[in-house]
Length: 460
Image 1 (tube, rainbow, N blue to C red):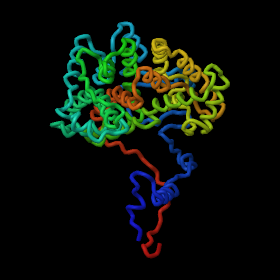
Image 2 (image 1 turned 60 degrees about the vertical axis):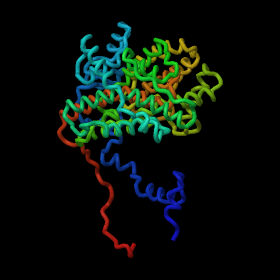
Image 3 (image 1 turned 180 degrees about the vertical axis):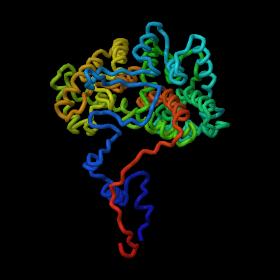
Image 4 (image 1 turned 90 degrees about the vertical axis):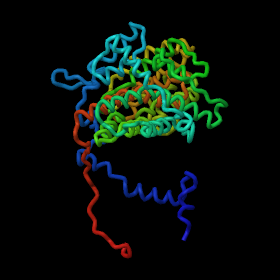
C-alpha cells in the first residue's frame, strides 16, 4: 500500500490524492441554487433587494440606505449614526475644532454618550496606561514564528494575551471592559511591531526597531510615529489617518465581523477568543481585506490603461474586469458596491474630500482624477453588464486603499489598520451581547439531504 503521508503532504503543495478528495468534496457538498429560492433561504441573510434578515437589536450604530416616501420604500443617500449621532456631524465637529477624534469615538461607542473635555482627558490617560505590552512579549511572541499575513499575526498575539491575563474567563462587564480597553490600546503596537518583525525576519529590512508609543500623541499620530524609522509625519497625514479610524470604528451590528462578535460572545467564551474570531472575519477580501484588493486593482488599471482621462478606454477595461478577462479574474470591481448602500456610502463621501487634499500635498492629482473617474464610470459599466436589484456606488474601501498608499503604509498593514479602528465597535457589541441576549445564537439551517439506509462496509 502506498505511503499515505507521501501522497497528501508536499509541504503545503496540493498532491494528486488531495485533488481527488477535493473533487469528491465539491461533488457532494454543492447545493443546487434553486433550492435556496424554493425554501426562501436568503444567501448572506439578504434578500434580492439587499434588505437584511433581522437578527438582533442594537443601540450602538444605525445605517440608513432607504426612506419611506408616500408609503413606498425608496433608496436614499447613505447615512451612518454612532449612538444616534450622524457621523458627518461628528467629523464636522472634529474638523471645526481642529483636533483628533478617534479616542472620543471609542468613548462614545463604549459608553453611549459624548465625553466632556475632562472625561475625554481622563479616558485618554486610561487608554495610554493600558498600552504597554507584557514584559518580553515582543521578543517571545511577536518576533517568533512571524507570519506573512499581519491579520494572522494580530490574531495570534490576541490569543496569546489570554495567557498573560490573570482573569481571562471572567465575562462580567467590568472585566470585559478592562480587557476591551487593553486590546483597543494595544492594537496599534501589535500591528506595527508584527509588521516590523515580519520584514526583519524575511530579510526585507536589515534592522528591527521599536518606537514606544508617545503619551502626548493620538492613536493616529502614534501609528505613523511607530511605523516610520524617523518617526516623522505631517499634520495632514495624521489628521487623515485619524478620520480613517473614525470612519472605520463601527458600521452597524450586521457587518460580518461585528455579527461574528455577537455570535461568538453569545456562547459565553472569553474576550480574546471573540476578538480573534472577529479578526478572522475582517481578514476576508469581501470584508476588511477589500482595501488591499482596491489598491492592487488600481495598479493593474494604471499599467494597462494608456490615457487616464479617456472615458471609453477606462469603461472598456472595467468591462474586461467584470468579464473575468483581466486583473484577478474574479469578475469584481473592488470598492464599488455595498451590501446595504445603493446611492452612496456616507463614509466614502466624507473621506473623498480629505483624499483630494492629501493627493494635492503628495503631488498625486492625476491618480486622484483616475479614482474619481472610475467612481463615476464603474456603476454605469456594472449596470450594463449585470442584472441590478439595487444601485451601486463607491464604498469606503474604494478610497481608503489610496489614502493608505499615500501615507506610505505597507499593504500588509491595510487591513490591520482597519482592525485597529473596528475593535472599538467590536468591544461595544460584545458588551451589548453579554448584557442583553442571554441565549446562544443558533440560526436554523434546513437540511436538503435525503435520508439514506446504512450500508455495511463490505457491501459498499
